[in-house]
Image 1 (cartoon, rainbow, N blue to C red):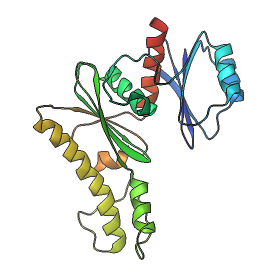
Image 2: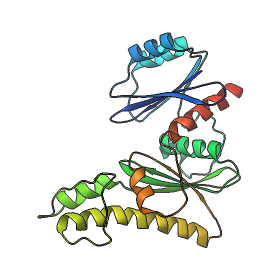
Image 3: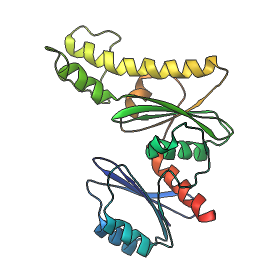
Image 4: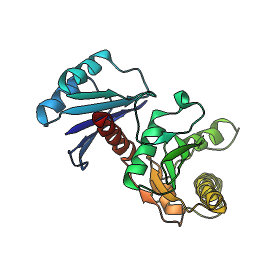
Length: 245
């Protein structure tokens, strides 16, 4: 089995994959340490591991993974990936964006892809049917937009929204005006990217991931593939690529 670790700023997502690529189990940790590595290896028949991190990784965790794994990959910009990276500054490309692109290609090979990761920021990335990552855009996420409206104005309140909220087209009070402006604004943004690609002669398969993906699914009436573990699927694909190289 493969152990895949996606270490973010506030939490770490971990997944176990069978040899056939099947996702077996996922975990979320507030803090992930060498002790957690030792525990997972003692509980499951793990042989290989990969870790991707946007923060400084504890050397003890890396040492534990190296010691216990037959194949260990510390994912960075020099790690071989099964797609062609055409980004002009590949060393500045977020590893989570690259892993998500790899995961999308693994799930939908030979398709033109628009990959949307709706998290703290919303990223839009494009991969061609022949496996070329062309790049993408970065925009503020939902919470960032709510925060900016409240903290950069004198009177607008801080609001939030639940996945089950009914979003009006136009708000009849300030709270609803902010909610509709932000959530529907993101929905129109997504629709705009889809239309722009269609205008260029591409009919993209839209891959959606990230914690705020359900809001987009609710508001955008367009076929989409929602996969919350897209980055982890990409990391597993990269690990298997390195093993074969």
